[in-house]
Length: 240
Image (cartoon, rainbow, N blue to C red):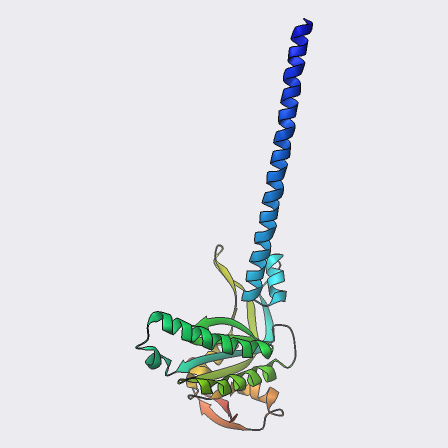
């Protein structure tokens, strides 16, 4: 009987020792998995911070970002002559040239307090006023002038349209695929102004003009009739 009890106790001790080893091993695995999860969370957040302004990214990470109406300035840019320039280039050459161009323009926009919402072919959509500052229109125009002056290093030219007012920002898309974006009349107007601008021209709407006319002296007014908007007065900026 005693031998049987001792045998059972030995079996139990062996099981406990094995169980302790398994617990230690499993704990180490969980700790490693936690480290991996924390690492990839940080990498994901860093990637998100490169895609949207930091304060918006933080709201997205916390799941608190909601669509809202803000007051700001929308800047649309588009290139003229780039299609002809790139016609005989290899695809990678086109990519390299555009990457260098976008890097230069994005830096200018960022230095003036703006944020690049998206690249569209060879065009750029930038937003000013996302942080709630009051001088968003002035910053947008200064950035646009700086971008135009930087075009001397390229063989093609740029058109820029600027519109100010209230527009909606937020996460838009499907349940599975969403991105931070903007929409509204001001966004459409900036796009229309860009399409009506001449090569090398910066064209602003009347609301933008009224906000910055005391800071900049050289404007030329003219009337245009953008599709879906009708006849309006716009102002060309003499930055040269």
